[in-house]
Image (cartoon, rainbow, N blue to C red):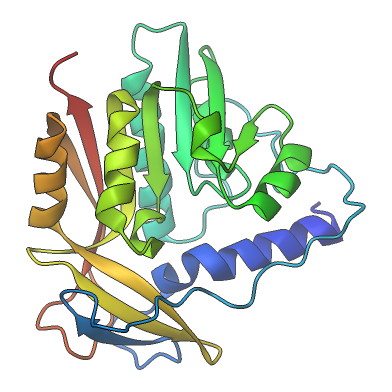
Length: 270
């Protein structure tokens, strides 16, 4: 059973990172969406989620989730088809990257409290995993207590120059300059890069605003052509595309519905 603190953290992280994923297609939702434009309007203020997580100073170092699953039990406790697809895609990527390897290094950008480490460990139990999460300082403080086997850092200067797999799940679209962030991640991909849970459009990227409980946040719906062009600039070859959620609620100002996707790349000059 989860502790009260673990439940609090699970709920807070779920609201922060996963709120948009759990929409029911076609329904009018209180989590309203509206398109702002292709580029940053002059004077536009990038909006972040204001209901930040409060951390107790005397946190007991307990795990966020039950980590006692047997190897291979990847989707136990996953309640929706969309979430199951996200978990299985990640497990597949961990297995593919680690093929014929005794150990791998992973950088998980925006990895919250390190939940994907649990997926990796259960997907490839025979492989040693050097797992690093890059997150906000307050999440790093919590994560380092919740998952002592995972390294948590905030500063780019503390990252290694290269990782076998650079991983970003539902993260880069919340960064003001997503292209710059993609570039930073691609330069450390040695050779694999997996960008997943991306709200994807066919071509041109759009700024979207979502209202959650009266709080407005900014997020990019990233054009697939824009993303692939950034990858080509870094000699990253597209290996696979995962369709994770094919239906999305209508967004005011868009003439197409986003598709939630994952993109697996491999550097060609390795």
